[in-house]
Length: 370
Image (tube, rainbow, N blue to C red; front, side, top):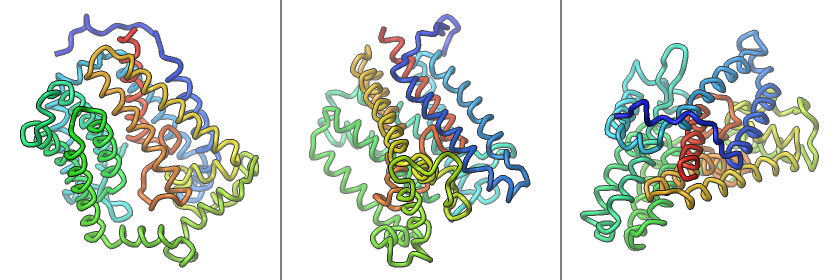
């Protein structure tokens, strides 16, 4: 296990990675102040209710970042069996009445009294660790489907199956995309990747047919203006919010749509309000920052000292950036509603804490590479 001598407490931060994250966190905190006060006052008689909780999550996220930064990334190989097993148990508990918390028709959370834990965030990390370990050690056998590719896919399918039972189509799709990307840059033949895509499409189609509300989301996405006051109300309001901002925005705190026209305007739809108050300019700044983060994450991967670190850096970068891309695509009407928050900017929780932990691990890989 990890010894104290292996932990190097130096502060050689990769500012090309950390600086965009800091800017996104600051912008997110400002937007949460703007968007959550009205909800906090109406529901809890405290305009600072969500702001205070988000500050706590930021503090916990900072601790998670320090852990990811100071612990050597090779340490996660040692704890993978325990971490992966624990994540599966936690995912399973969300399906057990009395343990899981059901919100919006999905059981994705565990109520820990003072904190609602979303186990998928733990599972996502250990899926990336597993893929990184496997792609490092099975370079030759990956060309053979039965001995190389199939065992790898079966392990990844365990958390994906539990996620589809919750159901959590958004995070299922995110894990699938990251898995596909890591396999794409590995020596696995393209015919095996084609089989993986086919199985993924079939699984998503079956999951949508089993859960009618997800089919309604697909229909709303295909025809967003068909029922603007009913099924498509929130998507229409999101598009109005983004369009109302114009080039420069209405100004900080001047949003009209945050007054209960949008659900979770401080979380899932925070980018809509950001575009309304900051306009196309501020929305573009956020997109560019995630672009910088993606480029720097890939650069860290290319400069890493092992194949394991290479795949780990690519996987964690994609987990952070693709989540943001999915969220911004959803609120812009480019994808069906999935319920995935905007990385670093949405109201905090497990997603914010784990995302900052991912940045810490990426910083550690960068530090070790030097």
